[in-house]
Every structure is written in C-alpha cells, then in structure tokens.
Amino acid sequence: MGLIREPRDVDFYIQSKPWTEKELKEFSEIIKKSKADQLAREKRRTKRKTAKPVRA
Amino acid sequence: MQYDRILFKIDNFTGKKSVNYSVKMPKKSYIDIEIDKLTNSIENIETGESFDTAIVRVTEFNIKLITKADWRFDWRKEIKDKAREVYKLSTVENPSIIQGLISIEEKSDHIFLHLVESAKFNKGKAKVYAGVPGNLIAYACKRSFDKGHDGFVSFESKSALIGHYKKTLGAIQIDRQKMYIDNIGARALIFKYFKQ
Image 1 (tube, rainbow over the protein chains, first blue to last red):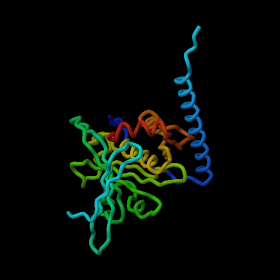
Image 2: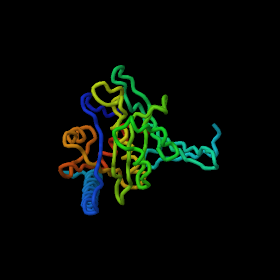
Image 3: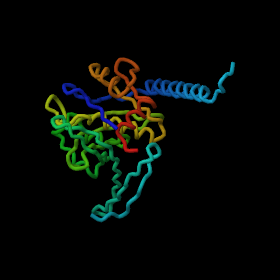
Image 4: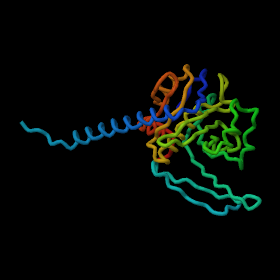
C-alpha cells in the first residue's frame, strides 16, 4: 500500500476537451493493440514457464 | 438514521466488500449511496500522517455539498450532465469536507476523465494534503474495471504536467496533450490504494 504524492510545488488537475468520434475511434485502436500485446506477452510467459527443461 | 435497505456489493476486481445504503428521503424518493473506501490514501504534508478516505458519488440530491466559490471548475454543470458521473473524495473521519472532485464518463471501451480538481486548501505550496488527485484517478481506473473496460482511462493533460503523469500515474502519451492509462498502469494504481 502507498499513495501518489504530487510534488509540493505542482498541482495536478485535469480539464479535458471532449474527444471527437474520430479521436475516440483512434483511441479504440490503441486499446485493441494494447490488449493484443499484453495477451501475447502473457502467452510467451506461460510458454516459458511450462516448457520442459532440455537435457544434454 | 434508518436505512430502507442495505446492500453489500463484492467488487469483481479486488474482492472488496462495499456497503450500499438506501437512505429514505423526504417526498418518498430514495437515493443509493455507494461508498468506496481507500486505504491511507491522503497524507497531511506537515505531520506526515495518512488518512483513510471514502469516495461518494455526487448527484443532484447532494449537490448542495459543492459551493461554487470554492472551486475553479463548474461542478454543478458536471453533475447536471446525465452522461457524466461526479465523485467526491473525503476522509473517513470528516466526510463533510471535500478534498477533491472528479468527473468521469463511460465510453464504449474506456472511462474518459473530464475534470479532476483538488480542494482550494490542497493547492499550492501551502497545500494541506498530498495524494488527492492520484487517489481520484485510481478510482477512475477501478470504475473502468467495474465496467469491464480492463482499467483503460483517457484524459488530456496540460503540457507542464505530462511528465508528472507519466512518472507518478504510469500514464502513456498519445499525442501533444492526450494521455491514457492502460491495464498495467491501472492495476498498479488500484493495488496502491484499495484494500485487498
């Protein structure tokens, strides 16, 4: 457990302009790619864990 | 206070139990108040003492909690916008004092952050508590998981804060101002704040 401390002389705030349909669509593509990459990483990790040790 | 009904909700992501009180209101209307508790999530800068916090939705029923003069952004307008959800963060000990506010909107595959603001006394060099915005953004990530969006959250940042958001929130920059938090970043934030 911990917390995220913002620097004392910096104030975090967010004020987003609404995104257009095109911008949202582009972001959806980023999400899809990110999920696919993560899945591939997890598959590689599982494969490495379950692989039988090679005996010489 | 007498509650009309009390519901317990188990969070899918953290397995945490939250209480959902239905409070009987005048004129036979009801309001559901869902309280999400976070652990040691804000810290008094002077003393270093940390406090448990609670996040509660602000609706037109409790809109009077927000005094226009105390905030930079127009939160009443946010609350009245049906597509958006506004949440307040306060300490468990002092639920009437709002430490910060967040306005979010569910999109088809993620949560969009419209506004995040700390209370007046949590701004500037003399700020009382640290950790308020991080806390609220972690909550937005949790909402993203709750809604089945795998933690994905998007927002726009002022140029000067982009580096800070990358470093502290694990946010990823898309272009000049657009940023997002992915599944890995969201998990890290949630594990930092929410009781397991």
